[in-house]
Length: 497
Ligand SMILES: Cc1cc2nc3c(=O)[nH]c(=O)nc-3n(C[C@H](O)[C@H](O)[C@H](O)COP(=O)(O)OP(=O)(O)OC[C@H]3O[C@@H](n4cnc5c(N)ncnc54)[C@H](O)[C@@H]3O)c2cc1C
Image 1 (tube, helix red, strand yellow):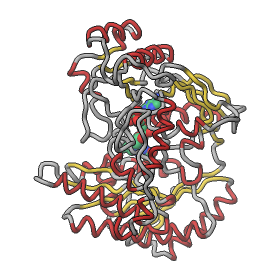
Image 2: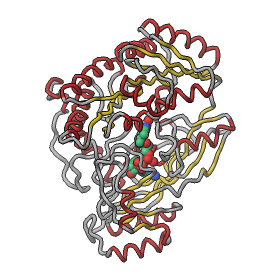
Image 3: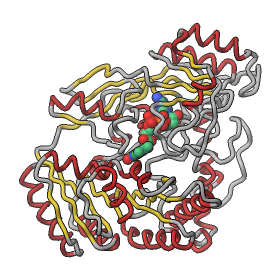
């Protein structure tokens, strides 16, 4: 890929009017949004505190249009950002000023359903849940299930390597994508992976999944689908504290049981969800666990009894077992609505996302609670307890002076706690714009340079979703920084936290 010598990134020779004309020639008038009022609809994703109005929003309907648009952006050094449904929570789809926002919503066709090979080929704008809806009559489903699955797109899932409640047993998006068609940042089209497993050569598909829209635009995705399990059993267990619930989670895993899902919600999260969807959660509980087992009926029945015993021995005061599909749906509805439900108990909230080793759950939850008290704020916890993926929701009043800043401080401190406990700055929501300045807390300059070299191999002009993931963006070819030891080697944990 050759670097263009004509102009720097963002310095196109085309006027905006000429650009609109060129884009309309590619996409038709209905495929180009240029009015300021309409552009504002796209100024942010789920991280609404970051807003940028793009120069144009483009609505392609096929891969040829994406190729033509991206080729023009490459030639003219115009930055562009892909957007699926805009539910991302880290600002990954935040537009670049003077840049193009390429929205894949119109590319929403399920292209092929190949049941014998357990594969489905979809365009990137297809929503997560519609894959399962499509194959359910055949007895199959698509396992990764972000809580936003009704709305979020497969393209966004690929870019964020999204997870969900059932990823504890079945793995993240990366474990369910076998092939990709990608339009590279210079407008070329490549195919990575395919329908079969383990293709030879570098695992470029592995690199692309989770690259947050910085290596190109996925235009076709081949997904692995799974056979529906013979039985699913779901239980809701109430505890007097998150400590007790955490003890039950450790007990279940230590017993060698891998549930399909183990989700935890604390008192505030229970109250918010109950106020919104009336799932029948016990309002007085200090924490609830939703434990789901699936598989062959005999095995599930046996393990379910074991799980019941472990919950009781860890202090569960109430156990509710879903007797039918309706009750199971009701239990899950509360959990899936939990983020949005925060609006019931707080004018504003900040969703944090971090990972810790499962065993550190009790200590981390205590530290978060102390942190919240110190800053005079409330933090609700709702998370994937089985794999230690926390989602603390820092509640604040945006009309109260200084509270938004205090909430941001608490959210940042929560990440420090996660890192100090051997965890990570993000579990499934990505780095995006939000956490790029946190990357040096986990990675050395050399680590980051290595990632940057990969990015440059795909995008030498630095036009594809620039300003995301990396704290100090450089143009490709700039001299990498000097070697420095890993932050966790030089700073004792006490210094980090
Ligand atoms: C209520 C709520 C609950 C959520 N629950 C979960 C959860 O349980 N698990 C989880 O992992 N996440 C969750 N999320 C976060 C979010 O839904 C996921 O990150 C999702 O995958 C984003 O998909 P999207 O289509 O909205 O992508 P967008 O927000 O539009 O974009 C996300 C990123 O993907 C890139 N991108 C989009 N399409 C493409 C493409 N075709 N090619 C290349 N890059 C592309 C964008 O540039 C951006 O960097 C939740 C969000 C909300 C609001």
